[in-house]
Length: 72
Image (cartoon, rainbow, N blue to C red):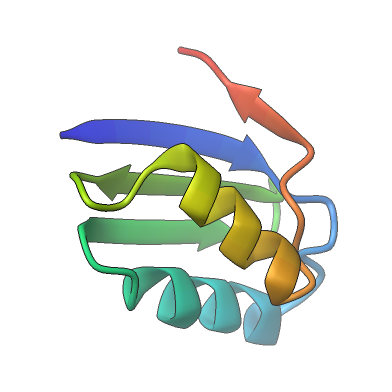
């Protein structure tokens, strides 16, 4: 299982977080999604077949492109 945290500057409201959590959460292999309006961060935990490329592509497709991957 992999957990990544992305910076997503386009998050501006609760609707944004709900959309991200719903859309990304529907990807096969995604275990959890937590979007935070205050920090503009999205934490995603996933297994195969999901991967960073498909997650980032989906975020861009729904108009919430990830600008950076945070390493902890």
